[in-house]
Image 1 (cartoon, rainbow, N blue to C red):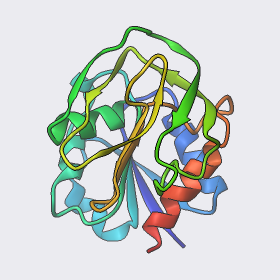
Image 2: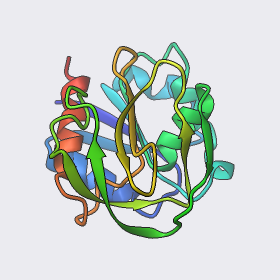
Image 3: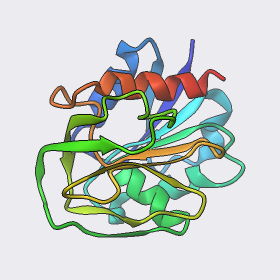
Image 4: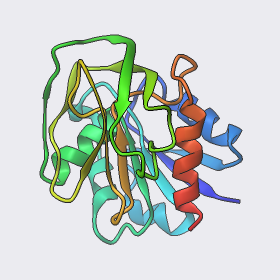
Length: 187
């Protein structure tokens, strides 16, 4: 069975991420974000960097982006922002705070994480903070009228991120996003 570690950045939906992964047939374990990756990655097929309230509370989550972490990594909301910030992109305040439904446009139909979604997909997202510029090597995979970078990928490095929350019921085809990530972990 595929096993995924969810690095808990103290987000309000982290347990829903665990449930969503279990619903697609994955053994998903929550690990505190102060847990060193060397205690986790040898026993898992992939890592999810959860959402959370702020970069001030990410513990050692950045360490899961080190080159020696040789499993696919999927960042959700703050997790995506963390990937961008750590790998040379920029993060800043969004024009729209709070959670709301957003229509995102998939701009890369070949992307392994979000390319299979409908060309316009309704999601549940927060834009208090967001990725402003992509890190080197990343491709824009989804955008919206309220956020230029709704999703990004570096498929060659197996690093993926979405600004929205695929784990909540309000997001259309959220389960499919998790299934697509799990498929990358089984390669």
